[in-house]
Image (cartoon, rainbow, N blue to C red; front, side, top):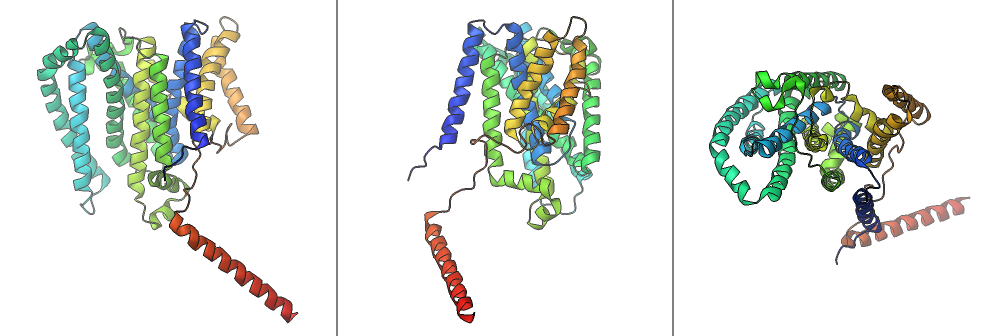
Length: 433
């Protein structure tokens, strides 16, 4: 028998398509001006990075403040690729970062399989092996990438200007996500062995380190196009409503299917009770690192999209104060609720960056950072579980699968036998009386 598409699925896909069309029409007709267009795209980008953090904290229970660091890595990595192609007409950034991410990813997968068979290998020793191998392969990829850069540039030129720019942009976003995932894997190996509070402090330190490195990217790493603390300019503004909607839709779909799988149930079990999960044979360390890597990959994707909204990046946009934004969003929407995260992300953009900026008198725009926390404080007092709590729309809500047909008959037999036993017991009791 063919599986029928559920009503909730049809409503979700239809509703998503309707939202996309309505917003696109409003943008095309200029009913939504450039300001509100930017606000909506920022809300979608914040939804992607917050969904990643919700996977790490809301579903897996790991308190992390490092999401903004991976967001920054994705932003600058994607921006460097598109900048070189847009300004210099060179595929150097694309060829180098593509090779680095491919070789590093393959090495991590192979090493994970090999080192997993070694008993008694501690996290720091494994981290050292990973770091040395990835470092060597990264250097070799850098050399080879420089050599094949002219060939990559020639290939892209064949596609034409508009098509090549789109291809470079999409690849840059995907590379940004993969690069953030690989960095998070290496960082998470030793750090995830810490307790939840200490892990949060370590991830906050990671965000601060990334910000300092970005401040000195032009002098320390020779990446003069990033301009260090002066800010990077010349980034093409390619993140349209279409692209940000497509990536958000895919992220929601991937995360929903993931959480409904056995992997998702294992991830949630680690949050609920690590000891009980371990007793059931679940590898706690593996599920922590996998949830952390996937959540960081979402942050990298979001960073790549953010870099191409305004065409300008500055390290101050990625300081540790801003790293609390996605944490506030997932708490406001409801930990463990994808629906709440999506709603809170757009409300964050519309209220903080939109309504309050326009409503407050001129010269008092910064007071929105006072009004917004007050609104959040009221929400936490009146509804501690967040706006949506554990509520999910039907498509995102996990539904237990139906019993196979071969088991339905057995269940009916068991139910019938149970009723017969209850009837017999009741008759015996009545007779005894």
